[in-house]
Image (tube, rainbow, N blue to C red; front, side, top):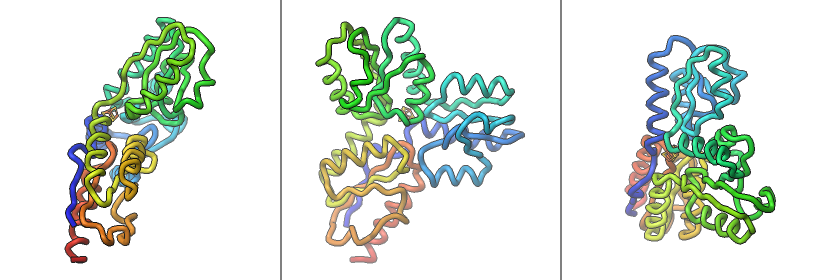
Length: 282
Ligand code: SF4
């Protein structure tokens, strides 16, 4: 069996930067080091950093002192202000593209638009953007359009890791309603789009496709959805240990891709084992 790895996959610059800031902070900080929410959506990498001392907490009430790392998904300005008020040292690893969405949401509201974000309401990036304006409507798909006012002007941004296809579908549905003005700022991340495009190209050319990443990772989920659409033999796994090797039987060519929060060591281990398994099987 041949194994191909997608041209673009694994850590994006935003996640790589957050991990390297966390590693440096753990080396240098005198007191406790916290991450407000898992530093990335990857259980294995979170466990690796926990062994190095990183404490993951879910809300700012669990941090009284020390250093708090703001992950690449960002945090609401109110949370950051709350930590500062307690004298907690902040290391801000928010991705610059996520910061841009937060800034735009605030500006759109000041300009008098009803702010709309196309994305998943429970995702931390979206939650942080919701904290940047007083009234943000989150639209995941057409069924959420009832959350919008009947008329008026909408200022629309998008969760960075959504697919252009989903953004297009929601915009089309909004366009069919009678809003007086639509201002759309494209906040999709090109890193995420490139991963989607190369995953789709690869999955069409292989017998079996593996998408590696955390189950909480929205961008990995999106890769898996897209690959499944074009190759029914697509498997979404966190690591090699989750693979049922029976799915390899009768397959000649395998493809591997990984979300923007999947570390290189998980991809390398998976690809190495896949090649070794093939060698044993032949
Ligand atoms: S996927 Fe894009 S927006 Fe998200 S952290 Fe990576 S570079 Fe930033």
